[in-house]
Image: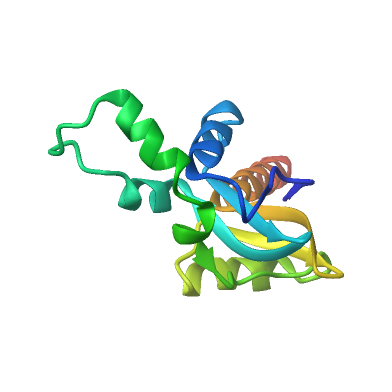
Amino acid sequence: MTTEPETLEINHSLLDAVLLLRRANLRHIPILENGKLVGVLTDRDVGRFAPTMLLPLAPQDYNRVFENTSVEKVMTRNPVSTIPDAPLAEAVEMLYKNRLGCLPVLENDGVVGIITKADMLRALHDLIAVLGSQLESKA
């Protein structure tokens, strides 16, 4: 889990979100309204929204479109979330069954973390390393 993840308030522009995604090398941004989670914006959401390359727009026109669009119009509303004390298996199941790339972690309605598929792969990698070393020591 990533603690204290980058977030944006709902009134931010899509351009703000794209710049944050790039600057912080993120794929998911929890979107807040008055400090409470109301949505998640992903790089895939941005990709689905982006004007196609078939449109003859100059770069500044793309920027204008992104500047004049709020994250609220593109984000996924009411995202599935979890709590800090939830079992890891429950988080894995939620990600898998809902086909999610991330799972915001909430405490008292505030975002305290985010669990991503990358976090799960890292945990699986660490588990395999531990199990592998235990098997080697028994051999």
